[in-house]
Image (cartoon, rainbow, N blue to C red; front, side):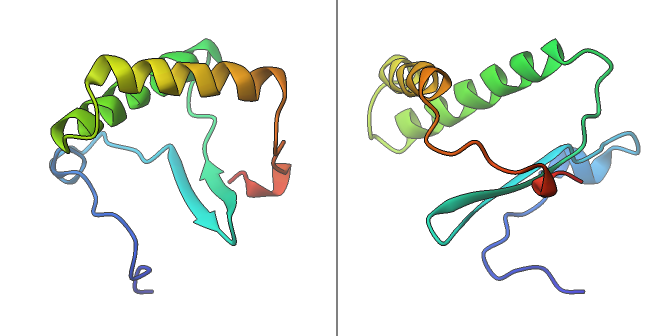
Length: 98
């Protein structure tokens, strides 16, 4: 089956590695979040490390695009993370999990 027209490319390192595994995919659908993921790790704390690593890469992207500095982007991401953690706007559904 062909991919979606707005699907991101597989990173080159994943294409080159026999051990690579996709663990998370996220889409915005009708202004909401739609995800599929594998728990993938023995320790759920590993997801915290993964999410922080993703935030850092996203922040670098904002800096590269000239939107703001990496530090400003990280501060904004963490602030909204903390706010969403305390008062979630959307709890999601278990059906989103693969």
